[in-house]
Length: 183
Ligand SMILES: C[S@@+](CC[C@H](N)C(=O)[O-])C[C@H]1O[C@@H](n2cnc3c(N)ncnc32)[C@H](O)[C@@H]1O
Image 1: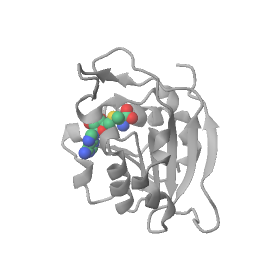
Image 2: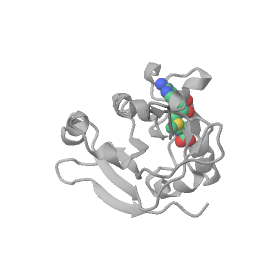
Image 3: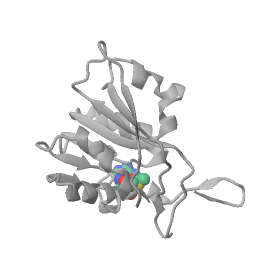
Image 4: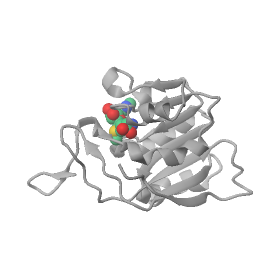
């Protein structure tokens, strides 16, 4: 992440940090091949094209840069939502995704998304879709920042999986550890 002279973080416009393609395989066992996938913040298509290469078809790709603001989408375009959302509004992205009532939401997020008072009720209250699983990356992901050749790998990340079928009252989220394969 770049810093400005005041030492503040200067993020890329629209938060375009492409997901490293070697970080996508761990979610494939949790995606249903028989129903469609929606990538609502598709960016350069890192997730959608990699899933396609793994044999998933029926992927709907939208992004604000192609005129589709996720927050203005009120219709579910596919039952499974998968993305690495813009960091600056990741919680709002999750809440909007839940409001569309998908079968599954899979988001690549900072591991620290697990904390904060802001998100306490999202994880604890039965009003929200239950968190099924967290896949923690044991190695650091190297994000490619638009316009530069490489990205930093300083922040721990995880895949967070919410599912409508998970019974909150009988089970708690599972945690597992995964590795991004060598690029
Ligand atoms: C962190 S990048 C991830 C890109 C892609 N999902 C990936 O994993 O490589 C975030 C993406 O969110 C898009 N974006 C930002 N705000 C958005 C919004 N309100 N609706 C849809 N896309 C948005 C940006 O244009 C950018 O492509």
